[in-house]
Amino acid sequence: MPMLSWYNRDIDLTRSSLAPYRLLEPIQSLSRGEEDSPNMLIEGDNLDALKALLPYYSGQVKCIYADPPFNTGQAFDDYDDNLEHSIWLSILYPSLELQRELLSEDGTIFIHIDDNELGYLIAIADEIFQRKNRIAIVTFKQGAATGHKSINPGLVSTTNFIVVYAKNKSKWKPNRLFTGRARDKRYNRFLLNPDAPHQEWKFATLSSAFVKYMDKSLKELKSEYGDQLEDILNTFVIDHSRQVIRLARPDYNAVGEDAKKYIDASLASPKDIFKLERANHSDMYFLAGERIIFYSGKLKEIDGELVAGEPLTTLWDDLLSNNLHKEGHVSLPKSKKPEGLVKRCLELVTHPQDLVLDCFLGSGTTAAVAHKMNRRWIGIERGEHARSKCQVRLAKVVEGEDSGISKSVGWKGGGGFQFFKLGNSIFDDEGRIQKGVRFKDLAAHIWFAETGAPRSTRAKTEAFLGVHNEIGYYLLFNGILGDLSKSGGNVLTKRILKCLPKFNGPKVIYGEANDLPEELMSELDITFKQTPYDIKAR
Image 1 (cartoon, rainbow, N blue to C red):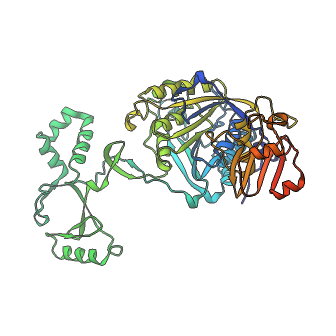
Image 2: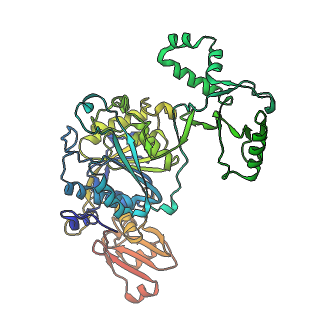
Image 3: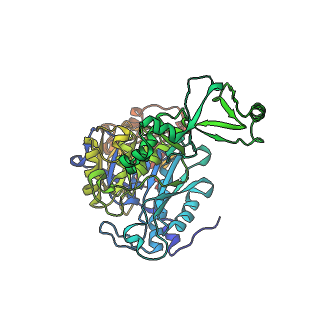
């Protein structure tokens, strides 16, 4: 597969592996709501924060919404979005590598971008996620050709793009979604007597039925309602969708033999209505060789309302950013995304309690939407934005703020989140364990380094870490056994060995030193690894 080349590419390909494993330090004063909430708002560098999450969440994230800097060449007040292509790639490539590690096997990543770096993004994403796992390139209409955009000659840009990848396309299982559409004006006839036997059905034009229903002439209706008349007609059509119809000529070569018989019969008797009863599908009606199709078949329930719907396509032109500045009650000019956009992404690939990640959190939109939709979430934002934008917005979400998608999902408040900042790395520059590192942090790192699997943040704090591939893992660190012996119980001795939980099988034990004879180690199938020197970094 062709690969994109850029200045310092070889160095950039090592950035994710060389990033240090840093600790996450909770800041209780900035956390909100439920104290044991699994939701995390992390203040810190994108790459370091992602690396810090690996020991706990590798392969656990169901959906990632990534909204990286667009590199538009404009200097925004909130972001430096004026990056050289190579610098932009050096930021994005290692970040996407780590995000892929965090995705579950059936997980999905949505990467939001404009046309400025779209080509480069696709090239590196194809490399990282593999081209065979690319799902779609969605075109998102985010504006209109009005105002200052329409002054200059040429093409007016009104769209962004969302590039969608699965971690493993063979395991990708999206949900079926529909989007609302304008009234289909081909449905222009009206069934006057729907309760009568189908042989006696009578039809009129839709407009005549509507005028009769409103009990006013069309001229009077236009004068009274003006531009609102179309909305009133749409409501009438939806309310009477089982009477609003159109005639459509079936593809004779594509229908079954039963349908062909009824088509032929209706052509032979063009004034009669024929009914084909079907056991596992809706009945079919034919008139003069054409099928009678009811508007009710087009209706879908979207956000609690019946509307004319169609299956979700790769053109999203129905999510305009009207009143976007009011969503979340925080301002982030030109960088904010509508809650409805993120909601659609989450509806497509997640279910309640799935884990959602956004490591370019910006104003906090992804976390706010995930919270309102009862998804677990992790958001990462660097610098002051984490506190002045994201924390403020998410605190309001917990309190029950009513902007964005709140009404459509019935959001009333609740839940919570924990605020973290990046602390020191687990190891110093010489590979020694930093002072202040807790047992659970080192245990998570060792478990992940040995097994490639995450260790739960709620795992028991005990020397026996668990079993993986029929091997038992132990860690002697920070007096986990309550002292008992040499160096606070961190040295493997016969006395310490007796205190360890029993496991019948191969064992790997981490500690400061080993005092057991080689014969005993071999007899008990123990492999000793010395901290910190034998601890791997991934």
